[in-house]
Amino acid sequence: MQFKREVPYKKIDISQSFVTADPGVSEEIITYTEDVSRGLLQNENFLRQFIGNGWTVHLSQNPLKSVGDVEHPAGYTDCNHRQIVIYAPQCEHAIIHEFGHYFAYIYACNFENVEEEMNALYLEEGSNFVSSKGDKETKYGKKNVHEFFACMFDNIIRGHGSMCCPKTTEYIGDFYNVLGNTDFSDIYSLDFTFQKNLENLFEEYGVAYSFFIDGVRVNPKIYDIHDFPPRGYTCQISGTNGTGTVNIKTKEPEEKIVA
Image (spheres, rainbow, N blue to C red):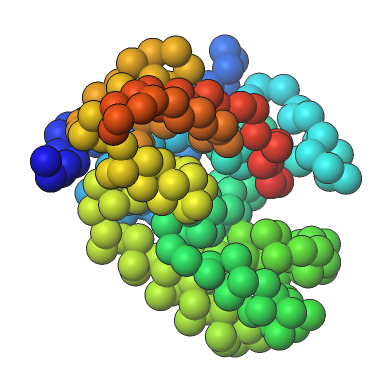
């Protein structure tokens, strides 16, 4: 018997707000955040990817927790919990930078060899980076590959040019266009290897095996991998004579937060 996955096309309301805020954050800042976010998520594909994969932007009224060696950052991007968090008083400074982290992460989740390509560009051009925001941001953008790409994205979107790093400028423009021209059904907020391994499990055992994810039975024919938690997992396969059970148990991932 031939097994064919037939995942229903997911309906997503792109008109819904994806911005949340602490009590006390002004409507002006909330509106500004929504407007800038939608400007960056400039077409239906981008919006469906962001909303459909469960991402949100949260505005905090209080200073943010430290991230690594960054004390009280203006914002951070939490890839495991699919959330951009911004300290509301510094929203204008931080929001484009954090979306730079988001786009770089999503691109790496869905295409092969992206991390290697980004690391190569950082090694080649990172030391040449100059931020439109001044010396402090220039130093921050040279810190590591993640901050380099987020700061470069910020430079490009703000229209200040990035001739200091021409190859990276072209690369960011290319991947932004690729994402903007790719339908939500082919874009996941989940590690590339996890995606492919799950798909292979469904294809290989879907005909005659029962599938359970964290104890909940799922239909391998229609299960949408977009709904899989952003975690690692273990898998136990048991059975004889071509039938059996596939037990998938998710596990807490390593923290993946970038400021």
